[in-house]
Length: 225
Image (tube, rainbow, N blue to C red; front, side, top):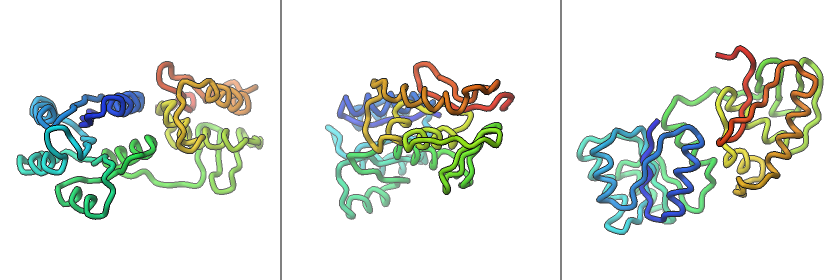
Protein backbone atom coordinates (compact mmCIF):
# COMPACT_ATOMS: atom_id res chain seq x y z
CA UNK A 1 0.00 0.00 0.00
CA UNK A 2 1.37 3.41 -0.99
CA UNK A 3 0.89 6.35 1.37
CA UNK A 4 1.59 10.04 0.81
CA UNK A 5 2.30 12.01 4.00
CA UNK A 6 1.81 15.77 3.53
CA UNK A 7 3.45 17.42 6.55
CA UNK A 8 5.81 20.41 6.72
CA UNK A 9 7.24 19.60 10.18
CA UNK A 10 10.30 17.56 9.17
CA UNK A 11 10.68 15.59 12.41
CA UNK A 12 7.01 14.65 12.53
CA UNK A 13 6.97 13.73 8.83
CA UNK A 14 10.04 11.51 9.34
CA UNK A 15 8.47 9.90 12.43
CA UNK A 16 5.23 9.09 10.60
CA UNK A 17 7.06 7.85 7.50
CA UNK A 18 9.35 5.59 9.55
CA UNK A 19 6.48 4.16 11.57
CA UNK A 20 4.28 3.48 8.54
CA UNK A 21 7.21 1.89 6.71
CA UNK A 22 7.74 -0.44 9.66
CA UNK A 23 4.04 -1.33 9.38
CA UNK A 24 4.56 -2.45 5.78
CA UNK A 25 3.49 0.66 3.88
CA UNK A 26 5.43 2.32 1.06
CA UNK A 27 5.68 6.00 2.04
CA UNK A 28 6.37 9.24 0.16
CA UNK A 29 6.40 12.67 1.82
CA UNK A 30 5.58 16.21 0.72
CA UNK A 31 6.30 19.38 2.72
CA UNK A 32 3.98 21.79 0.88
CA UNK A 33 0.75 21.93 -1.10
CA UNK A 34 2.66 22.51 -4.34
CA UNK A 35 4.89 19.50 -3.72
CA UNK A 36 1.87 17.39 -2.81
CA UNK A 37 0.10 18.32 -6.05
CA UNK A 38 3.14 17.16 -8.03
CA UNK A 39 3.34 13.94 -6.04
CA UNK A 40 -0.32 13.09 -6.61
CA UNK A 41 0.12 13.70 -10.34
CA UNK A 42 3.23 11.51 -10.54
CA UNK A 43 2.07 8.63 -8.36
CA UNK A 44 -1.03 6.66 -7.46
CA UNK A 45 -1.60 6.42 -3.71
CA UNK A 46 -3.84 4.20 -1.62
CA UNK A 47 -3.98 6.71 1.26
CA UNK A 48 -3.05 10.34 1.97
CA UNK A 49 -2.23 11.62 5.46
CA UNK A 50 -2.54 15.40 5.24
CA UNK A 51 -1.72 18.24 7.62
CA UNK A 52 -4.04 21.26 7.47
CA UNK A 53 -1.46 23.99 8.05
CA UNK A 54 0.95 24.08 5.11
CA UNK A 55 3.52 26.79 4.28
CA UNK A 56 1.88 27.66 0.94
CA UNK A 57 -1.79 27.15 1.76
CA UNK A 58 -4.05 24.88 3.78
CA UNK A 59 -5.02 21.26 3.53
CA UNK A 60 -8.72 22.04 3.15
CA UNK A 61 -8.11 23.91 -0.11
CA UNK A 62 -5.70 21.25 -1.36
CA UNK A 63 -8.16 18.47 -0.60
CA UNK A 64 -11.03 20.31 -2.29
CA UNK A 65 -8.84 20.70 -5.39
CA UNK A 66 -7.99 16.99 -5.40
CA UNK A 67 -11.66 16.04 -5.11
CA UNK A 68 -12.62 18.40 -7.94
CA UNK A 69 -10.02 16.69 -10.12
CA UNK A 70 -11.66 13.33 -9.39
CA UNK A 71 -9.04 12.04 -6.94
CA UNK A 72 -10.94 9.73 -4.60
CA UNK A 73 -7.92 8.57 -2.56
CA UNK A 74 -8.88 8.11 1.13
CA UNK A 75 -7.58 11.03 3.21
CA UNK A 76 -6.84 11.34 6.92
CA UNK A 77 -6.55 14.96 8.01
CA UNK A 78 -3.84 15.29 10.69
CA UNK A 79 -3.75 18.63 12.48
CA UNK A 80 -3.61 20.57 15.73
CA UNK A 81 -6.81 22.38 14.70
CA UNK A 82 -9.33 20.34 16.63
CA UNK A 83 -12.41 22.55 16.84
CA UNK A 84 -15.76 21.19 15.73
CA UNK A 85 -15.85 23.75 12.92
CA UNK A 86 -12.45 22.61 11.62
CA UNK A 87 -13.48 18.95 11.76
CA UNK A 88 -16.72 19.69 9.92
CA UNK A 89 -14.87 21.68 7.26
CA UNK A 90 -12.35 18.88 6.82
CA UNK A 91 -15.04 16.25 6.37
CA UNK A 92 -17.06 18.50 4.06
CA UNK A 93 -13.89 19.11 2.01
CA UNK A 94 -13.72 15.39 1.33
CA UNK A 95 -11.67 13.94 4.20
CA UNK A 96 -12.48 10.37 5.24
CA UNK A 97 -11.15 10.81 8.77
CA UNK A 98 -9.80 13.56 11.04
CA UNK A 99 -7.12 13.02 13.69
CA UNK A 100 -5.93 15.82 15.98
CA UNK A 101 -2.41 16.39 17.30
CA UNK A 102 -0.96 15.20 19.59
CA UNK A 103 -1.92 11.72 18.49
CA UNK A 104 -1.02 8.11 19.26
CA UNK A 105 0.76 6.50 16.32
CA UNK A 106 -1.11 3.25 16.96
CA UNK A 107 -4.39 5.11 16.44
CA UNK A 108 -3.16 6.53 13.12
CA UNK A 109 -2.24 3.02 11.93
CA UNK A 110 -5.60 1.66 13.04
CA UNK A 111 -7.51 4.40 11.25
CA UNK A 112 -5.42 3.87 8.11
CA UNK A 113 -6.16 0.15 8.09
CA UNK A 114 -9.87 0.74 8.58
CA UNK A 115 -9.85 2.89 5.43
CA UNK A 116 -7.73 0.44 3.44
CA UNK A 117 -9.42 -2.87 4.12
CA UNK A 118 -12.71 -4.32 5.34
CA UNK A 119 -13.12 -4.26 9.09
CA UNK A 120 -11.97 -7.43 10.80
CA UNK A 121 -14.45 -9.43 12.86
CA UNK A 122 -13.97 -8.77 16.55
CA UNK A 123 -13.57 -11.72 18.89
CA UNK A 124 -12.93 -12.30 22.57
CA UNK A 125 -10.70 -15.33 21.98
CA UNK A 126 -7.53 -14.82 19.93
CA UNK A 127 -5.40 -17.76 18.81
CA UNK A 128 -2.38 -18.94 16.87
CA UNK A 129 -1.78 -22.67 16.63
CA UNK A 130 -2.39 -24.15 20.07
CA UNK A 131 -2.02 -20.76 21.80
CA UNK A 132 -5.20 -19.05 22.98
CA UNK A 133 -5.85 -15.74 24.71
CA UNK A 134 -9.27 -14.90 26.14
CA UNK A 135 -9.30 -11.10 26.07
CA UNK A 136 -12.34 -10.73 28.28
CA UNK A 137 -11.17 -13.03 31.08
CA UNK A 138 -7.49 -12.17 30.46
CA UNK A 139 -6.53 -15.85 30.49
CA UNK A 140 -3.86 -17.38 28.27
CA UNK A 141 -3.12 -21.02 27.56
CA UNK A 142 -1.03 -23.13 25.25
CA UNK A 143 -1.89 -26.76 24.50
CA UNK A 144 -4.39 -26.56 27.36
CA UNK A 145 -1.84 -25.37 29.95
CA UNK A 146 -2.58 -22.04 31.65
CA UNK A 147 -0.01 -19.26 31.32
CA UNK A 148 0.20 -16.48 33.91
CA UNK A 149 0.96 -13.11 32.30
CA UNK A 150 1.82 -9.68 33.68
CA UNK A 151 -0.17 -6.70 32.40
CA UNK A 152 2.60 -5.73 29.97
CA UNK A 153 2.95 -9.31 28.70
CA UNK A 154 -0.80 -9.54 28.19
CA UNK A 155 -0.83 -6.27 26.20
CA UNK A 156 2.07 -7.39 24.01
CA UNK A 157 0.54 -10.81 23.38
CA UNK A 158 -2.87 -9.32 22.57
CA UNK A 159 -1.60 -6.89 19.92
CA UNK A 160 0.58 -9.57 18.32
CA UNK A 161 -2.31 -12.06 18.19
CA UNK A 162 -4.61 -9.44 16.67
CA UNK A 163 -2.01 -9.13 13.89
CA UNK A 164 -1.15 -12.85 13.74
CA UNK A 165 0.97 -13.63 10.71
CA UNK A 166 1.95 -9.97 10.23
CA UNK A 167 4.89 -8.11 11.79
CA UNK A 168 4.02 -5.61 14.51
CA UNK A 169 6.43 -2.68 14.70
CA UNK A 170 8.27 -1.72 17.86
CA UNK A 171 6.40 1.60 17.82
CA UNK A 172 2.99 -0.08 17.92
CA UNK A 173 4.07 -2.65 20.53
CA UNK A 174 5.46 0.07 22.77
CA UNK A 175 2.43 2.34 22.45
CA UNK A 176 0.01 -0.53 23.13
CA UNK A 177 1.79 -1.82 26.23
CA UNK A 178 3.03 1.48 27.62
CA UNK A 179 -0.07 3.53 26.75
CA UNK A 180 1.24 6.11 24.35
CA UNK A 181 4.89 6.45 25.38
CA UNK A 182 7.32 6.18 22.49
CA UNK A 183 10.80 4.77 23.25
CA UNK A 184 11.42 2.26 20.48
CA UNK A 185 15.17 2.38 21.05
CA UNK A 186 14.81 1.15 24.63
CA UNK A 187 15.69 -2.47 25.39
CA UNK A 188 12.82 -2.59 27.92
CA UNK A 189 10.55 -3.81 25.14
CA UNK A 190 12.98 -6.60 24.23
CA UNK A 191 13.22 -7.66 27.87
CA UNK A 192 9.44 -7.99 28.17
CA UNK A 193 9.13 -9.82 24.85
CA UNK A 194 11.92 -12.15 26.00
CA UNK A 195 10.01 -13.00 29.16
CA UNK A 196 6.81 -13.49 27.19
CA UNK A 197 8.64 -15.72 24.71
CA UNK A 198 9.92 -17.94 27.52
CA UNK A 199 6.40 -18.35 28.86
CA UNK A 200 4.81 -19.00 25.45
CA UNK A 201 7.54 -20.94 23.63
CA UNK A 202 9.66 -22.35 26.44
CA UNK A 203 9.69 -26.14 26.10
CA UNK A 204 7.48 -26.13 22.98
CA UNK A 205 8.74 -27.62 19.72
CA UNK A 206 6.96 -24.98 17.65
CA UNK A 207 8.14 -21.43 18.35
CA UNK A 208 5.35 -18.89 17.80
CA UNK A 209 6.97 -15.55 18.65
CA UNK A 210 9.36 -14.47 15.92
CA UNK A 211 11.75 -11.55 15.66
CA UNK A 212 11.37 -9.47 12.50
CA UNK A 213 14.71 -7.70 12.29
CA UNK A 214 14.52 -3.97 11.67
CA UNK A 215 10.76 -3.96 12.35
CA UNK A 216 9.61 -5.66 15.56
CA UNK A 217 7.98 -9.01 16.34
CA UNK A 218 5.18 -11.24 15.14
CA UNK A 219 3.29 -14.37 16.15
CA UNK A 220 2.90 -16.99 13.48
CA UNK A 221 1.85 -20.63 13.74
CA UNK A 222 3.89 -23.21 11.78
CA UNK A 223 2.32 -24.07 8.44
CA UNK A 224 0.25 -20.87 8.37
CA UNK A 225 -0.45 -19.66 4.81
